[in-house]
Image (cartoon, rainbow over all chains, first blue to last red; front, side, top):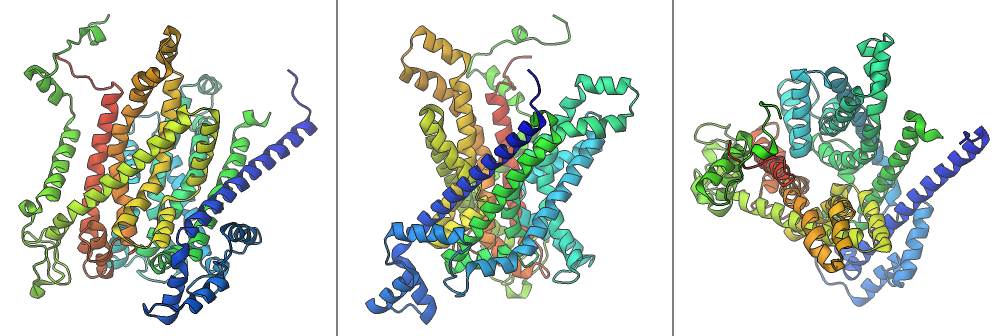
Length: 323
Length: 298
């Protein structure tokens, strides 16, 4: 079969990307629907919840007051009407109004999402550095130290809670050794411990898949042929074998974004950092449903976008997919 | 056949239940797994009869020795009221272990239902369940659990349900993959060719083979459930603060990280020991079920 003409190939790539984005939008629409359905399960008690917060005690609201609250928040409309206006609002970036802070959910999240994104992505990058570093040093060689570290990281990722690792790092390096600030301080310095806490377990997952692929790629004929052409061992590992082994790591990174968000909520609390962790924890303890839903939907959006980016990167790393 | 390797035929199958069988069985379990079994036994004792392990009453206060560092008389130190942290951790074992067992149980049962529908329910059911799982995967586990706690209010049962809902999609996807692999396996095709009815093929061939990994999955899942549930309690949105479990000890210890780190590190340490133990046992079960460990003489 002849290779397709370059123009055709461009059209096909655009169409692939459009389909991929459309399916992402579909996932988000379904996610919003699930979130909406969960919210309607508390239909009866929502007016009561808002009333309790307004008056600050547990007195029973009169029928008129309940009706007024129901009208204000649109709870007196049919479920279908509420659903359509909810999804319609989301399309325009309207995530509703916080029950307790009486400002738009979007503005509350936007104020706090920056530190969380910085923490999440710096941790992901550090995890990659650790995983690739260990792989280049260890895989396929009999290096006791690097495989011991890799095993340790894998154990860490499977059975050690991130808040515990964070607490121990905090106690050792901030409280006792004073290397890092316990609270506040230089923002870059304050990022180090939480970033390491979040990166370690992810580097365990990543290191495992990258090393497995790396070891099997080392057995491939192209490695022998590269070596026979006189390329150094380091060159073979970095240029040829690594390219093969990052592919499963990329797939895992898309998934890791969700895992990192989960841990960010905990780690932010350990280190008393600003971020969506504080917003969500406060919303959960108060019963602020629109705010919690907004945070969860935005993190789902981040997950979906991250996975689309992963798919695009995949094509860049693996030229076989470009045909 | 070379003289140094022991082939399949060289293994003598021992009669099940005989003394020689049990001896060989015990020998086939690695030391690390034995240690894990001993540790899990200790957790069971702490859960069933906490009085056996408690060095003193977990409620006994002694304000003269509040926030004391770990010592021989107080292994995990003392809290702000001078209560023995070790005894409090032992007292919290029962509820924490139950949270892990029940949450994982609910998640696995839900996963079996979803996995069966997807793996054996035909093309449409598979498409619908697979899409649903994809959507659920877009919610980070802890964030979905927090949303459920926000909507239904913090309580022990909501915490268990939240952890179960958060972890179930992962198990469901694994089980679906397993069912599809078994469904298309050679022995199922053979049974079909011989003319066995479909129902019997499912109940005798597909289901037992696909379900087997769930034993190790459940064991591995207990550690994960305990970790996620304790995370929710750590945030202060789980069961009420006076509830006796490790998560609430962690929440209480947060105020004393600078002054008394052991109040935070000790309950976390116990969670790690439990999670590592069940993970080691779960991995070993996995090896056994996949036939990598055999009981044989020699």
